[in-house]
Each structure stands twice: as C-alpha cells, then as structure tokens.
Length: 294
Image (tube, rainbow, N blue to C red):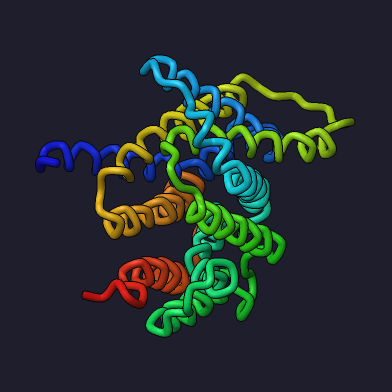
C-alpha cells in the first residue's frame, strides 16, 4: 500500500473511533430508555451494512457465517450485553467514568487469556494490570467524598467484561469478511437486547420527541453502520499496533466531550486515574507476546 492510500485508511479508522467517542454525549439528549436506544442502534446498524453490501453488489458469505456460527452468536450476545450495561452506565454516572470503566476491557482480556485462550500470562504486562486497577479506583472516587456513582461504575465494569468477551470470541473467528462478521454481530446484538427492552418497557409510557428519534437514527446509521464500515476498512489495512493505539482515541474523546459539552468534570484523582487506565491499556498493546519478540 502506498503512503497516500495508507493515509486515507488511517483517516477512515480515526473517523470511526471519533464517532464512537461521541456516542455517550449524544445519549444525554435522548428522551428514551437506554435499552431502546441500544436496540435501535443494533437494528439500524445491521440494516445499514446490509444496504452497503447491496450497493457494492456483495452478498454475505453464508458458508463462512455457518462455519463461525457459534463464536459469531456468542460475540453478538456479548455486544448486546455490552451496550445494555454501557448505556445504563451513561445514565447512572458521567460519560467519562462510564467510558473509562468500559476501557478496562484490555486488562480483563489479559487476565482471562490464560483460562479461555490457553495463553500464558505475560508477566511483562503485570505492571499495566496494576496501574489500570489503581486507575479505576481513582476514577471511581471510592477513597474520597463525592465519588462516582457505585452503580454506574459497576455497570461500566460489567460492560468492560462483555467487551472482553467480544475480543475473546473474535480471536476464534476465522475466514470471514469484516463486514459479514459485523452484520451478524449487530443483528444478534439486537436480538439479545430485544427481550430485555420489551420486559423493561412493557407497561411504560414512551413519549419520544423528534430530537430523540433523530439522534437514535443518527446513532444507528452513522455511529454504528457507517462507522463500522470505516472502522473495518481502516483496521484491515493498518498495522496491528497502529490500530490498537489509535483505538484509545475513543475514551479520550468521550472524556473531553463529557467535560466540554456536558460540563461533567473529573476530580484531580479522577484525571490521574484516567491517564493510568489509558496508558496502561495502550502500553499493554505494545508489549509483544512470548514468541513474538524479535
């Protein structure tokens, strides 16, 4: 790939990550239950990608989908649960705290890999784990007064656990295009959210305003469907470490949007915790696994 094309793919990937980072801020202006917004995002996003494939005259590879059926199903369920917990966390605590809790996922993957993936624990990553754990304690504010809502923090960490499940499942998926994988995962996520959304809102009186409907459509079509297309296009062309590091723009954007647009502030200890979490997660991506060292 020449330098110009590499630059275009990098811009696509960064564009997707920046869109992801603004989701929490947009949710603050939606007058609908968080689970219904998550459901709309899954349905609209999957339809958008199917339309994208149709425009490009491509059909989903049924054989590849069947071969990876179990892991696609599990990853889609994890995605749906991640959205349920994360969107609920946005309601219970600040966007910054919810996003930072969700980005404990890389650390959780490191801890789960020896059990679920039969990978040896890389001892070089232990300082990253410790730093991230200290960071999440500082972000939660449990050592001081006026800390983050413990329910919101717990929901954010549950989202991170589900996020880690997505990562683990995706490592098992092979021989399928990124968009085929995305459309199945989004569709399964919507099916996962559907019974919960029905149960929570069976007798509720919903009064969505025009702005809320518009934002849900925006989150589904632009922040999910279109962003996934940009994301996978860039991810498939860029070096793995570049993808990993640029991915941490998302929580940074979430924190900045929370501060500037929603006037949600972190304490000094919270900002220190945010730096610890993001640095630990990013550095852990740069440390090679055993056998990968040159």
